[in-house]
Length: 244
Image 1 (cartoon, rainbow, N blue to C red):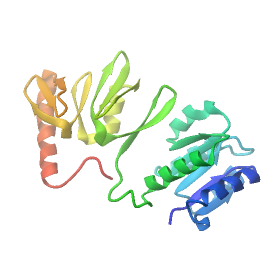
Image 2: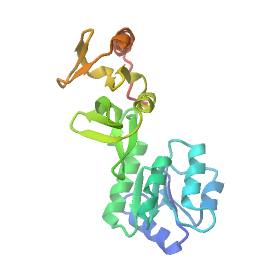
Image 3: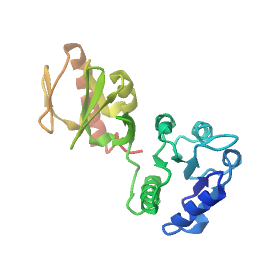
Image 4: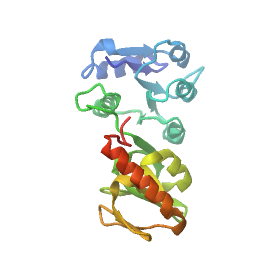
């Protein structure tokens, strides 16, 4: 059973949030905390934690950083009256950011998404899909790796070309390459390509399944061919790069 924590120094607030959640989850799933210290003292961590940022003593952001040191997979959802903490929330990989006051509908939407992310809802079956969290235009956006066709860098921005849209944000392509892992290959100083999207290639160009044509740098060609053939071998053996 999924375990959901609610941490807020105001008793009325945490009880109201708990009451709104009970329309979707059993009361036994909920654990209420009056302070950040109470959360950190808990031996059994919650799967999902709704965490107020502004609290006396140990504030929510400090709690989040300490929790991240213990558990990289815990779902953290910040609850605050101030929008300016959104960038710090990105740094600790927060799943969502609820700004007070919020409606019951919005709370329930976030709760459903978090529970599904945990794998405790029927909608989630099989392995968890790998994902990337990026910050663009003041928002934290989740991107599933399997949806990325390729990435390019232009004018100091990374452009993620996905199956149905593109997303621009500031990051070094070398950093993104490290985050994406073995399912992607650097074929040019300005391009990263998802191996599963490659339809054909020659010594100068890689053709993707959506019709995109990606230039390949001559020094990168041999390494690309080796990685691509290795990817084909792994695929034939039933392995995948995008499931945990």
